[in-house]
Length: 205
Ligand code: MN
Image (cartoon, rainbow, N blue to C red):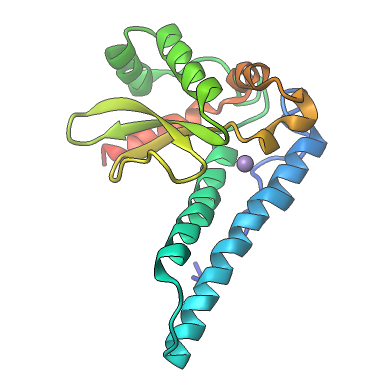
């Protein structure tokens, strides 16, 4: 694997039309090639600024720059995780978790429907733009739902991300207009539980 000192937009693990009708081709293409790309570009621009300033030994606004980087990098990483925890409905997408993950969800939330209800509430009630995120805490071995504002606010360091749902308006406005709740409902048809399970399994190694 070659490593770069900059970020690149990853390819989607499926075709742009693969998630329709829950996410249309036009909506997905725009989200990936414009919005996700913008976070890649935003993060890289800041790294270029670091390089330039350090080379010239000049100053930059550290506080503002780090805040902006956290936003772009958070957006970049969350979108990578988002595309990978989606799959075409009926071809890896939808259904319910199985195995150890199902067990952990039942242990924490009582039952899957209760988890779905809480995750849905986190997604629909995120203020402005944000994400619903299922995480795991190694200290307690418990699952925790986070409601991330923007891409970087309300995140608790050290918690492992298992599943994310983007509820920025740019994720659904072409398909659902202002109806975020309908988009969140659709998510359950295209969530890739195998991928979520894989992330969970990796924590145990
Ligand atoms: Mn997005």
